[in-house]
Length: 297
Image: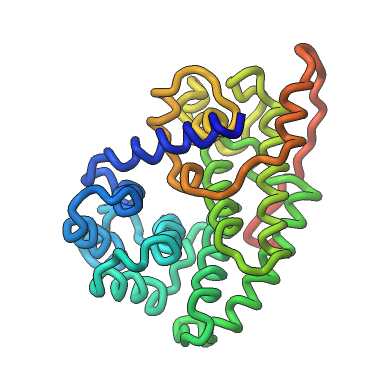
């Protein structure tokens, strides 16, 4: 099973590396190309500079408020800095650091996935540059790492006990997983890394419990029309395909997730044991705590 997982990860990375540059707003294809040693590095770095110049015209998201998806970009930049910093041009690296140092990159949206994306990104940035000053927050890296580490500890423990507000979301669960995979890969503090790993295993167990084969069944919080009509139109379909297999490889690759194919995370043995021993017919009783994220913590 694990060998097949690694094979599917390689296929997903190769698919991302073939992605259109025009569609690669957040740099997934760029990082895949850099890590695979393909593509023109000068062109790749120029694309990254355009994305990192997030808060100035022309905004990569055109008419969208740059304060909306800024944390999506931040998470990608964190992986660049940890995995491919030596392949970044001086201009690209400086532009990425300006994105972090000169702006508050927290999204204006206070939903669950946005809060996790922001605090994971800032925690890992501060861990990499602990002595740097972050004037926009009035603190240095060491202070931010302590603050965000405490936040993430409380946040993930709360989710484990009470459930996720975006319960079983076909789209936003994949954003939560992106953040957790990044935290697992790069966090140096064992407690934080273990919390990320346990959270990922718990989410996968929850997913297995709600699935019939590759079909993610039941109610889903924060679901969009295309995914509601066809489960294949979601990031979680790609997550299931990578870790558990199934048919429709082409559909899974269309929703490839960079963090999934690059992460060192592997589901625990007990996750696969539950999948293997799952009865054909069963009742699933499940509850989630629907909480107001913006006032909760």
